[in-house]
Length: 581
Image 1 (cartoon, rainbow, N blue to C red):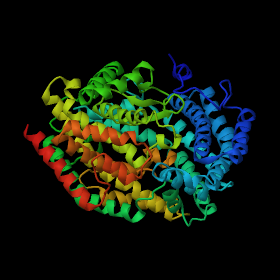
Image 2 (cartoon, one colour):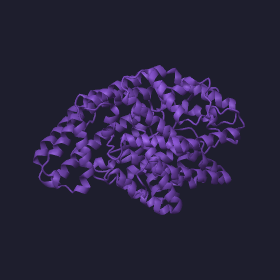
Image 3 (tube, one colour):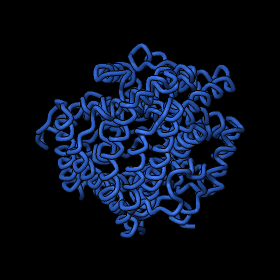
Image 4 (cartoon, one colour):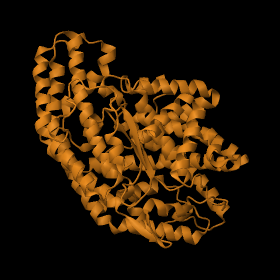
């Protein structure tokens, strides 16, 4: 069944009480009366119970609209060359979403103005209250058109990337399919594949740079309209970063440079020695360092799903039951294909209260990690399924990524499900831990890049390139030799979709990776207890502040050097044990 039909057939978690069953959510003439009715009814609210009922009705309308937007986004990214899907998505983001924003703003203000707001239970409503105040404070009507244009440009980036293919070894392949050859033991094949992918990316570098510069201008204007000196300061407020500041992010960058980069350097030097090569080149980073055949955990997405399901059941039978929900409703689109947007994501369908997983699997161990990761997000969505407040069904992103990254680590003891023997599974475990060591510096680079980008408005393309290369020097161990491929190195950031579609979103991965490593260490002592705390924290959704979510999971909200050091040591210890084995 096609994705469009799958999504259309999903049952609602609850019957609608306010939004008409037959409404066309893409027709503003049918939506506007619902907003006006909510605005009118605000004056009739009596007591705290009446205010809560009114908020829930507004949430029902919000859930219907969110699901409609998600449905159109999923269909568009699953096939970026489908003109009908593209038109439907763009119609929603240009004609519907901009018109809803002033009305949602008015509903927020009516909530804040209610004389019964103070009578709501403070602990229950504290986060909702805080976030609503923030949204009202930041709202500017003149920003609606700017944000809509930014979303359209983000969709264009997806379209550019989705159209990228190369002809390699006699076949047209997506970039993800071609990247599979980076693991081949034949060094010439690896180099040819790497060249093919990076040269194809460079073909669109000017279009991507032009697009990004348009986005930077839009975002800078959004910040100024809201009274901020720069988009960084605006983004920190807009994303609800109440519990940390840019200074803590800079401390994280420093901790990674001092504690993680030396570990990455030793791993890369070890790789060079084992491969017996004088220079480690960028196409030498994915191959097995002992030149063993590539890990091939699955041949088709059917096996990927079956084995992943087995792992979830072994971690906790309840997780296996949750994953079965996705399988039953066909909420998995996993294979890479021409026209499909790059990357992977989990998207919540708010009326069905079900998660959808999108990815580009080609048979790699990284694909296993991606499905485990997105599975963690899916479990988070299902854990909050019975939460009546729409706002609380979406946790802060810093903790959403704890849900997903923890699942990757919790799954490591069970990778024999894919490989059938401990030796191959140990290779996969080591590959994953080495990947974390490589990921943390990349997170620091992308976050530091955005700090500079958005505090240096009006910078030139040459200045941006120079700062990117400066960051490469700062966080790169200096082992990989890019000589002759300086242009590829200077444009590596073009493949990071978050820069285009989710501005200033990336430090969340670093914060969450440290949280996930703590969950992993807890599980090494008592798996059942660690998983129980993890699941308890997921069920809180957004209903508690970020540090409390971490505490409920049995971990600390801390991404300073003090937190990074013991976790880096734990990774080093685990890598030594795998090497000895």
